[in-house]
Every structure is written in structure tokens, then in C-alpha cells.
Image (cartoon, rainbow, N blue to C red):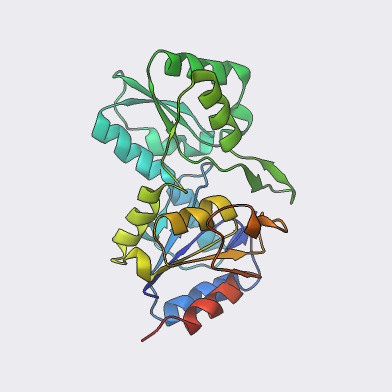
Length: 256
């Protein structure tokens, strides 16, 4: 092991509270001299707000250690000279505030929450039907909501627009191979020497393994449901109770 990617929601924290042992587990991985990057598909918070939330929980983390799909979307829009049409949560809008407008449009869809109205979805559909580019910040099926129950994530709405248009979105967050590889490249770590820890067997675990990571651990915290480890291919390298157990598993196998 030469580096570790950690999901945030459901692994480090649940809602507004850190998961028991999670902050200490991050410290243990750092003490073991393992570089870390925090790879999150959250699309309701801009990166500064994510970092501030983690600081409030007692986690010492730098902004440059957090990888979220909004930054990948910004890079894509600038590289392709597209103007964003946003179907996202208001909390994420600051990430796109200073981008050029008035050019060829690209629909950018994330977890818009209550903004997923018929009118907003239909406006996005019409732009896509007219040829706009189609970017999905993430395609997760569900997330663990503040009340402790599962709620719809962006994925079902992305799929609805894919069905209506007959087109496939370009997914910029997990399980995009490029997303995993960008985080690994940032810490100078080859996929075959890296581990991923997540609570989503599809986006976190199977996605990481398809990206070539040597190890992907599924935790039984967050949105994990019994049997998740058998629902997607490739299956997790191991299933552990939580981040504390994952950190122990990784440190014991990190090598010289």
C-alpha cells in the first residue's frame, strides 16, 4: 500500500456527526505515512464548505486533499469552452459562478434536491434534445439522509434524462475511472499500490477496482445494506465494520 482514497459521507461522517473512530482512523493512516485523498460524490456542498464541515468535526484536512466532481466539471467546461446550464443544489452554485456564459451549452446535473422540479428537468431535457452536452456530477442511486433513511440521489434523475433523450451522460465523479486516477496522480500513487474505502459497493468499491486499484474495502456504515457486497462486480476485496477497521486492515498490509 502506497496511498489511500477515502469516501466521506458514510465513511468519515454521517450527517453532521463523525462516525465513531473515524477521525482517529484518519490520524492512524497519516501516522503510518500513507498519503490520503478524500474522494466524495457529494454535490450539495462546494469544496470550501466540505472542508469547513470536516474541520468542525475535528478532522485536520487541506482543501487540496478533497476531490469532488464539481472541480472536474469546471475543468471539462473550460477545456471544451462550454457554458453550464446547471441543474444542481444551490449550495454547489458557487463552484460555477465565474465561468463564461453565452456559449454552446452543457447541462450539468447533480443532486439538486428540491430543485428537481418537472419544469427544471424538462428545461434540461429540451436543451439536451437540441444537442447540449450532458454532464453528470455523479450517478449514485441513493444517499443516507439526515433522518437516517435512504433518499434518492442524482442517479435516478440522470437516468430519467438518459431515457428521455436516448443519450448517455458523461459521469465526472465516482465511478469514473478518470476521477479515481486524478486523485491518485495528485499524490503520486499508482493504482496497483492504492486502496479505496467506501460505503457504496457500486460507485466506491466496484468503481475503484475497475479503475485498477489493488484494494477496495466496503464498510458496513453509512448507506451499506446487508448483501451489498454481492450485488455488484467486481466485489469488494474485504468487508469491514467501519473506517477504524479499514485503517487497521490497510496498515497491517502496507508493506515496507
